[in-house]
Amino acid sequence: MKSKVSNILSKLIMFLDNSGFEPANDSPAANEIRSFPRPESMKTAFGMASQSLIAATDYFEALVYLILKEAFAIAPWSCARGMVESSALCTWLFEMNIDSKERVSRSLSLRYSALREQQKMARYDGNTQKINEIEERIDSIERISVDLGYDSVRDRNNRRIGIGQKKPYITTLVERQFSGEKFYRMLSGMAHSNYTTLTALSFTKPNFRNKGGAVIQRAIPTELHMSLLSWVGVIYAKCLWLKTKQFGFDAAKMAILLEEFYDVSNLPDTNEDRFWRTIIIISS
Image 1: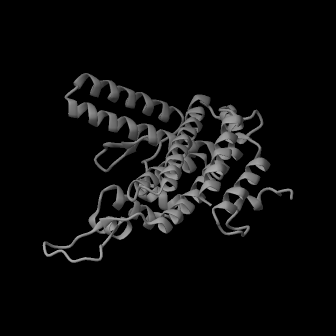
Image 2 (image 1 turned 135 degrees about the horizontal axis):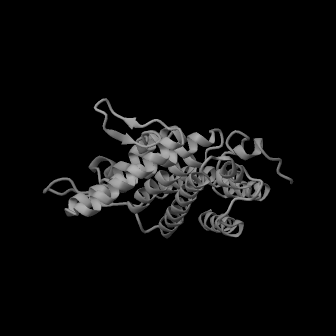
């Protein structure tokens, strides 16, 4: 099973590479870009979504490698966390059932959040010039936002807390996109080296007594790792499908690849779980 997962992942990545970076002329993404009052803003939104998919792919490739090596007990969980976060942003921006204004609003909120983080680092370094440059950039983006018809995002004290909209917390976003808050909190516990989470998922007690106190040793939870791989694989499939649909790539080919991906991962074989079946007919 493990080598088959690695092989189909390579096929999926090759599909993305061969499909190119630009949306097809008659694709939903291309139509949104053409019709939006400021096409550059829409291009940025889809560009950010694509970048998040690249990040998710990188994390997923690394996760598959770590698990197939059967040599790492803890690293796969933290890697999966990064993959889930990237995927949440990817699917949020690529979502099909939102209008252009909402998509750009989401993109603007992420740009604001990223600039604020850069500003925090500049403040830590005491770089006043950089702080001011970033503030000017934020002001510029907000002016574009207002020109596009978005309201200023302020708190009760009239302090700016976003542009376009206030960015959701990543935990909220993971729950919204994947109903995965509980699982994500477990991944965060591993990333933060929470004692109880580490003990439950990646350690075991050896069969001997130690008078100096409790003794635990690292253990590779093979079955749990395979379950982890399956769970994040479902998330990754949603990312791939959304980009395929938005950019007008070959949906029939992607559906065939996803069928193979779910088969080798032993994922449920129902139309509800294999969501692409309700959208496209797969030839046998």
